[in-house]
Amino acid sequence: MIRNDWTIEEIQDIYNTPLLDLIYRAAGVHRQYNETGEVQVCTLLSIKTGGCPEDCAYCPQAARYNTGVGVQALMKKEEVLEYAAKAKAAGSTRFCMGAAWREVRDNKDFDRVLDMVRGVNEMGMEVCCTLGMLNEDQAKKLADAGLHAYNHNLDTSSEYYGEIISTRTYNDRLTTLDNVRKAGVTVCCGGIIGLGETHSDRIKMLHTLSTMAQHPESVPINALVRIAGTPLANNPKVDTWDMVRMIATARILMPRTMVRLSAGRAEMSQAEQALCFMAGANSIFAGEKLLTTPNPSFEEDNMMFELLGLKPREAFKEEKELAGIQ
Image (cartoon, rainbow, N blue to C red; front, side, top):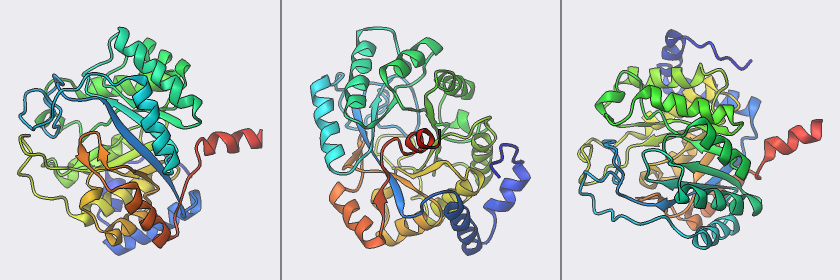
C-alpha cells in the first residue's frame, strides 16, 4: 500500500535497520512495484551558468564564491536541441535544463526557455527544467509548452536548511512545488547528504517528501560534490553506505517513485553503484557533467548497464501504460 502518513518514528526505525536487512527489504519493495532491470536515464544540461545571487553553501555557481565557474549567458535553442539529440542517441529519455537563476522572471529569457521546452518535447523526450522559484502562471506556461517534470530540491531538513541557505526559505521551496503540482507537471524533488547535517535531518527530509499529498515522481539522492571555493569544500566525503541507506529508505517510503542516484556518482565504483540499484535506485543522470560538476560518461554507464543487465526505461512509460489501460 502506498502511504503518505509515515511518522518520524517509523522512518527512523526503517533508516536504522541493519544495513543488509534494509537493502533486502528495499529490494523486495522495488521488485514489487517496479521493473528492477530498468533504469531511467536522464541528462542534465546547464543552459545558463554562474552568477547566481543565492548563497547555497554547496553551489559553485553562486556569484559570491570564487570557484572558477565563469558566467555564461543563456544558450541558444539550436545548441540545446543539438545537445538533447546527442543525449537521446546515447540512450537518455529525459532531458533536464538548468539555469542558475534565483527565480523565473517574465522576460525574453523565459520565453526562450519555453521555446526550448517545446523543441525538446517534439523530439519525444521527457522535458525537465530546474530554474529556481516559480509562480503559478509561470508553471502553467511551462506545462503548456510541454514540460514533463520540474526539479526543485528541498536539499535537507527544514531545521537545518538555514545553515546552508539564507537567500530563500524552506517555505519558498514548498510553494514552488505546490505551483508545479497545480500546473499538472510532475515533481522532481530530493536532497543532498554530506552538508554537515545529522542523520535526524536526513530522516526529517525523507519525512517531508514521503508525507506530501502525492509523492514526488522523482526523488534525487545527491552526495555532496566538494567544490573548492564553496563553504563546504572541506567537508568529508560522503560514505557510500550512507547513500545506500538513504536510497533504500526512500524506496520503502515511496515505492513507485523514481529514486535517482544523482550527484557524487563519479566517485563511486561500479560495485558501489550496483548496491544502490539493488537498494532501489532506478534513475541516473548520464553525461560527463551535472551542470558544472563531474559525472561518468555515457560510455562508462553503457558498460555498467551491460555488466549489470540493466536497460534504459522508455520515455513516458507510465503515461503510455495508463493510456493502454483506458
